[in-house]
Image 1 (cartoon, rainbow, N blue to C red):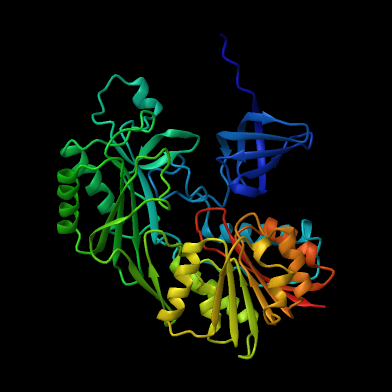
Image 2: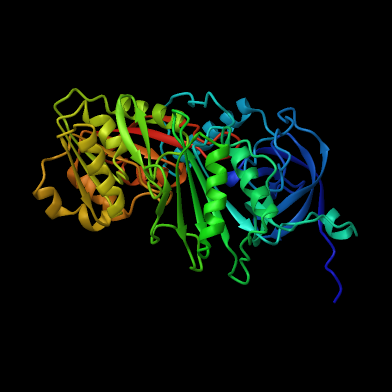
Length: 468
């Protein structure tokens, strides 16, 4: 069968940044071109991947003229692993595009023109900002095109790293990663090398067999580390040998835990986690509040920016001390507890029972007696009966997942009619959609984008709405 010839669009000027990190250009005829692998300001030749009636998707095959915003990526794996897609763009320009995206979404999707845009809150640390990273083992390391065409023997095919985008069975063997501070790289490389040298079986995702499956590392702001292994099967002697080696080499590890996972997926939430060393959790502190972080706990992965996000959320709420506050999608209750010290009472709602259990435990740990937490699907729990049996909210905080709020939840907020709504979002497009449903009853006063994930296109946004 004859291979289809590539279609190349030449000299496409990339004008701005689009959703999900692509750059946007135009053909001479004015058709929109969404380009991966380029940044705004580049002039590129584009290999067409998909052509629709009103736009074209493609990838930058050749950079004809470099953007003035281009910088040299720090990571040797840039362009291969699929993460940190904006590492080749100056951080100042990343912030500009993130701010513009949020502003455009509120105007275009939300249909609102008159609001204050507070300058984006950039991150002090643009690298090594994540406190949690997860890696996968594989006995079929991803090979470069050069390695495939070469006749050289590149040794072991064992790998420990990230999945190659679009290739679920291939793992990039990471030599370095700029997302988590030391000793993250050293621990990962030590685990990989120990496994290879001691002939431990790395996981075979196609055959669903092997010994070493996944590695998760988490640290707190005190420099204490948790290491979690998922093992496909139990090999007690090899497990003890590996774990003892790590504990001897890295005194920063305060707890080491593991789970046996023979399932078809890597989800840990339905697995029993065993503690090999330490307490099985880490403690974290945020402005005097203590949080117990376990293997299944959700906690913001950028500690310093999360703290800034919570401070700004409290600032937007502008609590005087006598308010009833509702916190929707409360998770483990971090925002609820952060604002509780300035409120009369906080009511948190969340769909995950483990998260609610953690929220209650944290409230007790912090001596907070003015918080109440409920578990259930938001659109089912937050209903007329709930509102009849609870005091009216003066302020409502909502921090939903990427999909935003269900329409029924928005309708209940409008019925509840709190004086203020503080809407925290990781997806300004769905946030703008929800705000549009509220704009007849609420005035959007201001927004504040917050950069939680430098070198990526992701951005959080806080919006303050006041009842008309």
